[in-house]
Length: 336
Image (cartoon, rainbow, N blue to C red):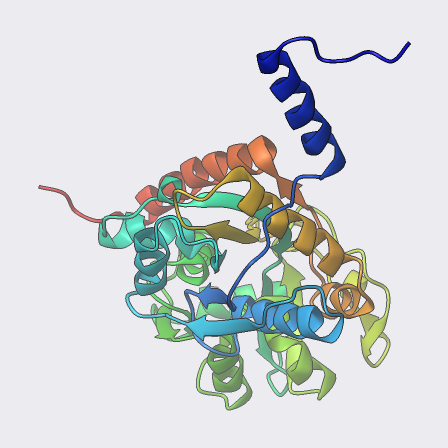
């Protein structure tokens, strides 16, 4: 015999349960264009990654809404971070981050900390390479380091993105190894930094692979070493017989400096778990496309992917690391 609901209240519960069971809950989706804030200039690694993702999402129809990339590089990226922080509860805004997530507030004292945002996902870790102009006589890291040691202080010019950020942190570490001061010249983005090295206006850079690869392919720049504990695992030939895997580690060349940079996404504070989950799922789809895999290969990225508590813990540990590095370099903002 079929079971029936015997009381009014229980009948209502039965009826409501039947409806709930027959209509699946709708996952959240954006209802207007998605905005990706880039807290850095155009042409740099973060900007390139954001625009490649924009193209992938559009080409493969991964979102019903369009994606807009907006550069807000003022104040070493502080403008972008404050814009994301102040967009509380807005699930249509994302910000792609690099190490200025830590370095900018530590160096400037602006009212921002990464905990003001909602972690979404680490998309990759970016490498740093010591680059020189291909017309210079420096064939190896040792050649270049020996030249710096033999020259007066401040004779060699290092070009980098911003002041008191990752490029200058690495430069300070290089100065400690050589025992000589370098003249650090800041530019707005990695694209401009690479152009300055091609033009011979600086002697070296520590640009990310993606920011300099086109100039390496053209025979204008020469990579000397990578600031990682191991060589890059990409064997496709880039220039002549050389691949990313043929670049030695800086440590193996007597330059004991290691550094990796975050390429990850955050949302404003006050967004829901369903809204975060939408973007995690979207990013997973992006990572499966051939265009993304080509970006990872072209830029020799470390393809580590993290979300949730694992990602938040990594960011917290990275903040402590940067605070120590910047304290050693004398880059922390002075407090009263």
